Length: 275
Image (cartoon, rainbow, N blue to C red; front, side):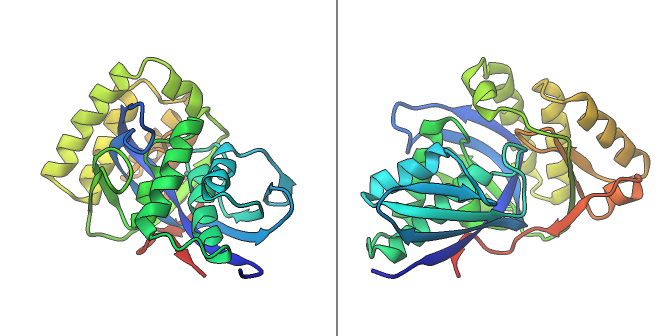
């Protein structure tokens, strides 16, 4: 047993998705596409007599993290530092679940493979209702396309072979659980249309167009995000809404050119990793 271990998990912005439930949380998930980000979450795990989860100095209840530790049958202190806000469409809960799985596997010598750890983290997040596809995308890195739902034993992934500067501005939180627990029929139809477009033309430009159209057709746009997207379009930039958050993201310098003061990062070339 090690004293501690640390993992880094990239943030993930989903551009569009369709929901695919299943009684088995490792088979449930989403199809869609998104960007993994160099801004992410660093998760440190150390053995403890009782489980505690700390994010940016605050002790929180984060169900996917607790479920991961219970599945591994270990008790630990999990301390995470995030470059990104929780609940704003950046996959922070998924990153914490996956980072916990990777770091705990090393600390407690669980001897599980990457696919096994991703499956545990993915299933934990699906059970919690906090996400459907972030974990598998964060494990892959780059600009992943989720062609089939579920964990690594079930899904099919591809990637848009490109890198980009990414800017983002968050106007606050949206509840992923509230959206996913409601009627997702319209959302899923829009997500399937968007995926078809990107599969036909796997480029960043096609991805951004499909994401904007999805946000509109799925009726997810907030007033602030709608205005920001219009501002970026007015200066010939590419922007869309992060799913699911009150957040706008843009490629290149779109938000800066439109007069905003965004956070700046880039697409992450690799997936989650131990430090």
